[in-house]
Amino acid sequence: MGGGLYAHLTTYVEPRIFDVMLGVHSLAYGLIGGLGTALGPLLGVLIDIGLLESIRALAGYRMIIFGGLVALLLIVRPRGLLDERTMHGIGNLWRRALLHLRRPGPGTDP
Image 1 (spheres, rainbow, N blue to C red):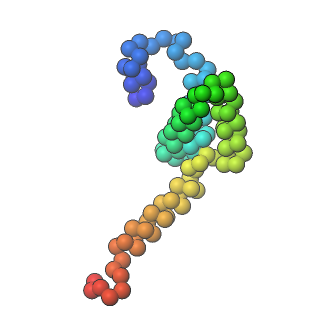
Image 2: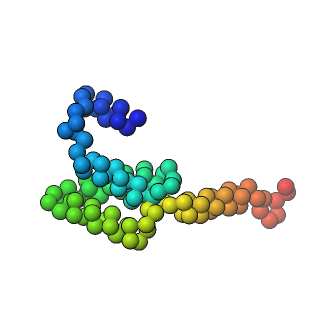
Image 3: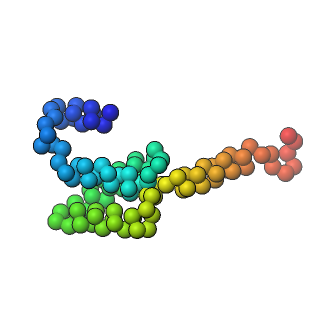
C-alpha cells in the first residue's frame, strides 16, 4: 500500500529512487519501534522521520546520529521500544483501567 501511494506521489517509479538508505531506514523502523507488534514500526517511522527532520540543520551528521540511535536502542532495548512484553503490560493496564471505570463506587446502588 505504501509503495502504491509513493508511486502516486512521484507519478513514476524507477530503480534509482530506491537506494540503499531507503532499505536501511525501512529495516530501522522495526528495530526502533519494536518487533512483533503492529504499532512498533509505526512508532519507529515517527521517531526516525521526526528525528531526522528535526536535525536537518546538521546535514553532515544526520546519518551518524541516526546510526548512533539505532545502535543505542539495540543495546538498551533489543526488541525495540514497543516489544511484545511492553504491549502486554499496556494491555493489562488498559483492561484494569476499564474495569475500574465500570465498577460502581462506594455508596452507589448497583
